[in-house]
Image 1 (cartoon, rainbow, N blue to C red):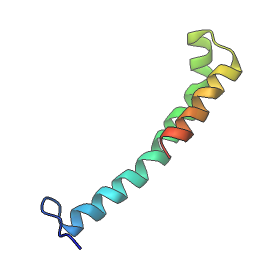
Image 2: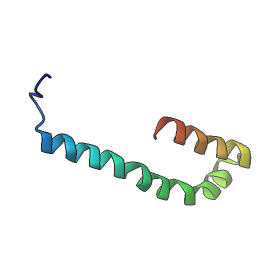
Image 3: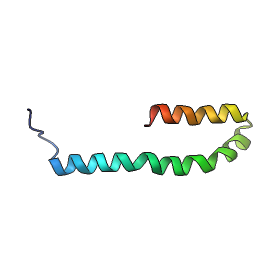
Image 4: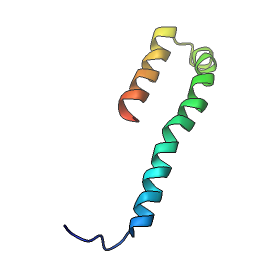
Length: 60
């Protein structure tokens, strides 16, 4: 096992906790904006929903 030189175990744990809270927070911000995005970009509902699918694929 190679010892981490730059991050202590506490900092690694803090980083994991921070990253795991980022996704639920971003979903809470993203979902209410969907109707506004549809209106602003004059896009179909299906196209706006595709952005949600891409969000779940790339930011799990």
